[in-house]
Length: 215
Image (cartoon, rainbow, N blue to C red):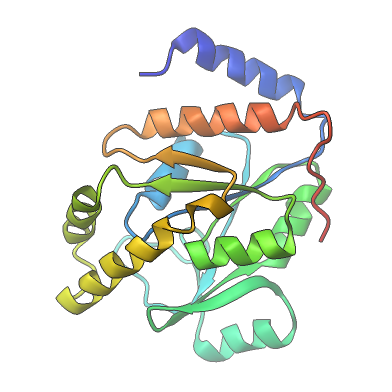
C-alpha cells in the first residue's frame, strides 16, 4: 500500500498546483489491462479530473451506461461526428469505431481542469502526434498470462476475438518507447496505480517549462 503521509502530501501539492496550466492525460494500454477499473477507482477516490467519455459504435455491455462508460452511437451518428471534425482522433478497433470528442477536452481545459482520456494504443500514439504536449501513460500487464486471465474473466469476447486481442497486445507493448510513463497494472492493487498517476501529475505540474495543450 502507498504510504498514507505521502499520499496526503500529494493531495496537498495538487491543490497548491491548481493555478498551473491544465494537463491532458492520455491513459492507454492493451485491451483487458484494467484501464476502466483504474478510472473507476480514480472517480471513487475523488481525483479532480474531467474524465473524457469516448464515443463508440460497439454494442453496450451489461451494466454499462450511455454517457458514462461510452457515448454509444450508431455508425451513422459516428460518421456525422467525423464529417463535422468533432473528434480529436478515431479508429476502427476490432470492427467497431472509437473516437475522442474534442469538445469535452477543450471545455475542461478552458476551465482550468485537468482532463484524462482513455484510448487504445493506436489512439494514444495518434493523439501524441497531434498534441505532443499531452502526458501519455502506458498501463502494462504484469505478464502475458495475467492479461489472458483478465480477458477470459471478462467473458465478453469469443475465442477468436480473445486470440486476436492477445496477439495485438504483443505489438502494442512494443510501442512503449512512444509513451512518457509506464505503470504496471496489477490485479487488486488499483490504489497503487492511482497513487503512481498522482505522482506523475504532481511532477508534471512542477515542470519549469510546462506542457501547454492547445486545440
